[in-house]
Amino acid sequence: MKELFALTRRHRCGSRSPPSSVRSSNMQRLILAALLASLWTPSLQAGDWCYQSQFSCDHQCKAPDQWNQANGDCGGNSQSPINIVTKKTVKDERLTAFQFHNYQQLFRGTIKNNGHSVQVDVPHLSIISGGGLTSSYKAVQFHLHWGKDGGPGSEHTIDGEQYPMELHIVHMKHHYTDLATALADPEGVAVLGFFYQHSNIRNQKYEPIVTALSSIKATNGNASLPSISLAQLIPPEKNLTSFYRYKGSLTTPKCTESVVWTLFESPVPLSADQLRAFSQLKFHDGRPMVGTFRPVQPLNGRQVFHSGATRILTSSAILVAAIAAAVGLCQPN
Ligand SMILES: [Zn+2]
Image (cartoon, rainbow, N blue to C red; front, side, top):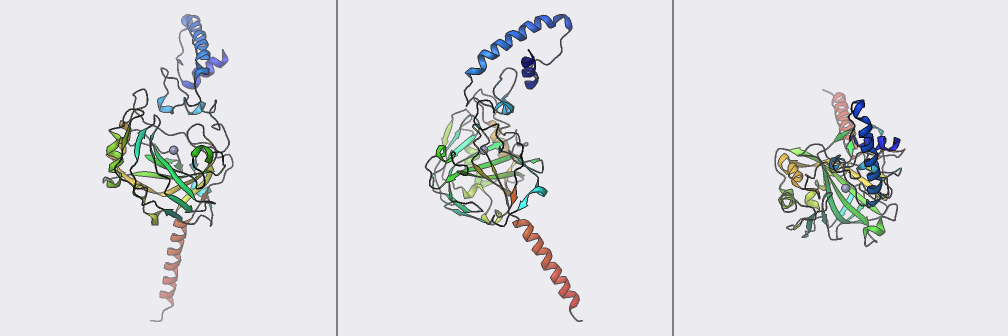
């Protein structure tokens, strides 16, 4: 019975306190519900998980706080996403600029509503190296995480700030041919994460994706995209020298801890309408696909590093100004 109450409390279902006269009949119903729940729970597949936004008393799916039940590494010590506390990050000189090979390459992909997100598989032609990575990695797919109607929706947060959306470009070490194999390597996968910010103007480079969303509202819906490149989805390369790095996991079950994470400081601008367009997608039950982010996970002693490019620029500018001022002061009249 204790377990039953723990269950109802956790999901905030049936938590109203009834008058004592009706408690005993309600108790019988609770016992019945517990028995039914005990029969129902084992039938859940490992893949049968949901976001918190999908959980309701009528639809008791496995929300993030239950992903650790039969979902691989979800209860592990190096989980993602995390909140990045910028003042606790450590500057790492090895986090040099990335080289993006074939990121300009145009390809015709298929955009799909996979029931949890919108995903585009990409030809394994675009390769990243540098950026402190110990190997080169090739792009496999990209997908997004968002909130409701352009509200908070990123997975990672920076000093507690949640951005409206987050792009994940998933890469695997260049010598692997499939993600499953790469995930068995503790550094087999590298995900580049990009935040979004509200802009007053539409981002034309995102029109192909935003337009396609209306054709893939239903789960398993897919549509052909016109030619796009990965480069058009991210800020210009010169703005990508400032980033955070840490070791973590996939942010969906099975939460495998084999991801080298990079979060870029420079966000992608999208208009309010463009951000809102993602909320027209539907989960498998027909309800709006919103709040597709996992809550932040404990750091458990992990260190987050930063490339420090912005700070170097800032301190250089101050230094130059100081020298200029000093020279100015020393100049004879
Ligand atoms: Zn993701």
